[in-house]
Image (cartoon, rainbow, N blue to C red; front, side):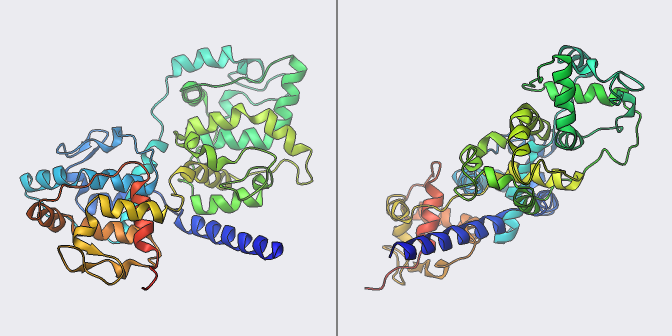
Amino acid sequence: MRKAIIVVGAVILLIASLAFAQLLPEDPTKGSRLFVNKGCVRCHALKGDGGKIGPDFGRVDFGNTQIDLAAKLWNHIPSMNIGMEQARMIKPNLTGQEFTEISAYLYFLKFFDEPGDATRGRSIFNEKGCSSCHPLSGKGKEGEPGLDQFPQNISPVFLTQSIWNHGPVMIAHMVKLGMKWPVFEGTEMMDLLDYIKVNAKGAKETAFITPGNPKEGKQVFAAKGCIKCHAVRGEGGKEAEDLGKRAKTFYKSLTQITSIMWNKGPAVLGKMSQTQIGIPKFTPKEMADLIAYLYFLHFIDEPGNPVNGKKIFSESGCSKCHGVDGKPGELMTLSLSKYQKAGNSMDIVASLWNHSTEIEKAMKGKGISWPRFKKGELADLLEFIRTPKKKP
């Protein structure tokens, strides 16, 4: 009996893991084309470039899970409908896949760094002790490259890759010089990178990295042995913290994620050097994919609670119009049974969006207030709708 429970638990964990991997985007920038083609940009700017009717999405914090982002959108649909009517716009229809791509793109906007300050970066370069090893040109005492040898337009991915691939050597040099490993806070790494760019004269082609692939980043996380120490939502090792439990920590710009990895460098590299796998080496693409995977950890929702969703279904007024077990709603004959076993919750979200104008008119006609969902509530509601109901 105990073995059966263990096997069932393992199967459930595997299914959850596969579902998580399937939901991760492959190209987080793909939704940018939809954002333009579907007309979103006519109302919403991205850091000043675009419409002025709605908020500038380039300056909005989208640090919520995908379904919580959908809940925010739902909560503002009445005001959005008014704005579209005033702008004489026709609300575009979306498929579940299109909704997924647009929401992933909006979540991805924070990933892009603001410009650093080279003047502050010069001070940081000296204060953190970087100048003790790296001169402005030529080579340092131990053969360390000068800043002129760094790639032009150096990217944070290049720096992160260097931390891991050359970390042990860097640590040994610092110990020899009696230096402490420098810690970077806030935008310090951005400023330092900007200062390095001013002095860098190396090849250009090695510095630029295309946006990482979070789905492939999950594979890198496993292949490089990260998962042997770090679990993600219960899947993986127990020697270090479960990164799924602190996923929001990685909802930061690319350079800030680099700072997090840099700051933990000695501790992590020290532990990995004692394992059978040893310290892994990364190609630029592998590092870009890994960082993108960490960034999107918080984006993917955990399964909602269908029991709580049933309560929300009733209290929010959904049951007034909709049934879920083949029966009609209390006031209308609209059943949501077709969404049971829906593979992607975004298919239901897209349907809500596509019919939101009609839904709002029907609710006003029935005297039903527009429901607004708090954090986690829409995930519970969608899980209730998707869960097959027992027949009487």
